[in-house]
Amino acid sequence: MRSLFAGLALSVGVLLAFAGALEAILRTTHWFGAHVSWSRPDQTIGWRFAGNSNYWYDSRENDHPITGHTNSGGWNDREWPMQKSPRGVRVAVLGDSYVEALQVERESNFLSLAQAILNRDGERRFELMNFGRSGFTQTEEWLILTSEIVKFAPDVVVLLYYAPNDIADVDPSTATDRLRPFPTRVGSDGVALDMSFTRHTAFRLKSFISPLKNRSALVSSVAEKVALALAQRAQAQGMHDHERDLPDARIPGIGGYLSLATDTRDALYERSYAVTKALVAAMIRFCAQRRIDFLLVAIDTPAYVPSVEQRLKTADPTFRFGFFDHDLAAFAAGAGAQFLGLDAAFRARYLDRGAELHFSKGSPLEPRVLGNLGHPGHWNYAGHRLVAERLAAKLGSMNTLRDVDG
Image 1 (cartoon, rainbow, N blue to C red):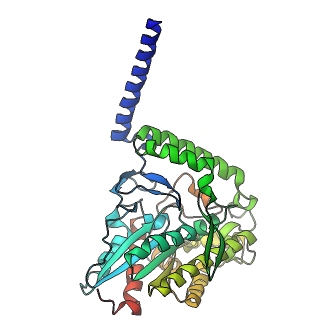
Image 2 (image 1 turned 180 degrees about the vertical axis):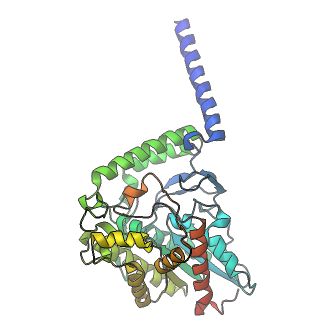
Image 3 (image 1 turned 120 degrees about the vertical axis):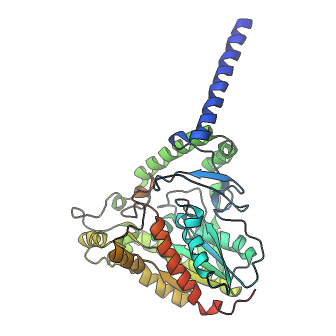
């Protein structure tokens, strides 16, 4: 018996030593992309980054991993004081992974670049605050605006609208992640949300595993690979028929969010599009009541590349390039907000310089997530520079900001 216990103890000791050595190797080499997780489940918005955490991120887009540090709020940004600087213009920027911008170094993202452009004259001190998180829709953005951003008393709120994710993920029947809040009613009297995701077994399991992932690269790596496999399987099983097909010369019609730019709209996506606009309208009203300016920015679509537009027109001759820019511009004007569309700017830069403005490849999930056609990757360095130029020019020209005084 004693020898049996001794053998078991030896086996356990060897196993622990092996696990410890493997953990050390993974932390130092990031073998197969391994890293200690810096995210955690959140009872309000599903998940968020842990505050004051170092991160190592391999997007599979850039040719090198990106490292950085989250602020105390869990955002990919510097630490901001509650009170803005003298003669300051505080701009809170909301959006998904395009705003989060983990694919490039922080000093190279459009927020940092636009802030530097705006502050060249020295007359005012613009403070561009990053409130972006991968997978955000207007639902989570509403929650962050009303609970966190408002505490910083911004002069302007900027919301970057990304049609592929925002429209699909606002409805549980098309969302790629259901462990999140969903709107049940949006009106002039407020927003009602379904927060039942916190009671799901999967969310409770994530909450249990999260502390281990935040401390171990080995546990984090295994958990993320399992989650990725499950997500890919769920997407393959749950996709609508029109989402399985890429529009090309062999396949008639366009499905998903891009159908909104045609005469044959997908009814489900049309309803979801209306919900996203209702949520943005609620945010505009919320800001107007507090004398906060609101700027809506429409992120470019793949059709800014002429060959992609032609491919879409082959699938459906009624496809209209720039639809979201025009439609959201009219919506913003009616709601009392400023607007900036990026489709035309991206096309002009592409035609002028032949510049690639997105990374050539995205995450393993992205082609499925976007349904029928999306960007291969996020903005690259040239893309961030272009967005910075346009955003800085727009913010600098807004009449309501000219007399801001700290």
